[in-house]
Image 1 (cartoon, rainbow, N blue to C red):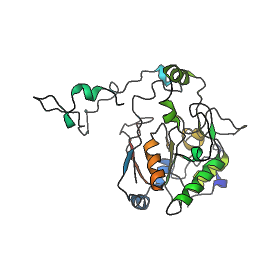
Image 2 (image 1 turned 60 degrees about the vertical axis):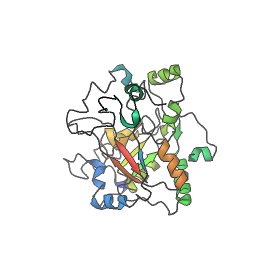
Image 3 (image 1 turned 90 degrees about the horizontal axis):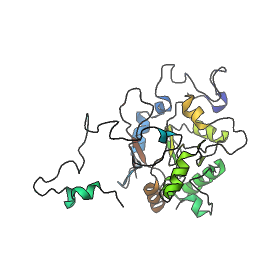
Image 4 (image 1 turned 30 degrees about the horizontal axis):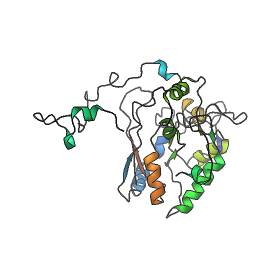
Length: 292
């Protein structure tokens, strides 16, 4: 039985809101423990249209990562060899040897060259997604209520659900000029839009037994906090202090999924993520897919 939000922290000596020991003192899964067999089988029923959406932003973006990550080597091909272990060959892996052509008649030059309405918009809420902006709890709840009303069936949270919040950051990023993008990446302390720090949001996530949070913003939460003395960061409670052991997904590509949700009047879907199997790793490419 999950303790109530008011019972946190479970040990008075632990950090605020923490749930250390809830799933055992040797636990390494945190809120992923909520994703039991029943949760997964119920989630599979969300696949009704057969539409699939990759939520992975390009590994080459952002060009100038925030949080001083641009000061470290930022290459991927040198960090891991995608054909070293378990793998799947892509369509550009092998060409017709005589013609030198790949799938659909593409040449080597073709495949190396780069490829060429949300709630806020509906309600006239405008903001610069590349700057500091806190998405308010009240707006998130109003958005959820509207989506539930527009859906064919009311949206009801279930244990182990994954909550995704689209801020519009990645869409805005692609519109930035080169100097604007570089300036954004170099800002210290980092500035980013995201969910505003609000204890009501913490209570909501805990009581709804949300297993993972994610979005298209660089940190999911607004940084630096714009509210007066919030008293916490989501990273502290959800992840860094390992208060709940709740994973945070960031910089997801949600545009295609958002358009499909609006088109079909459905804001719930099957969601899967298969992080790289890197023992001792601090993070991994998301490798996420949503299915309607």
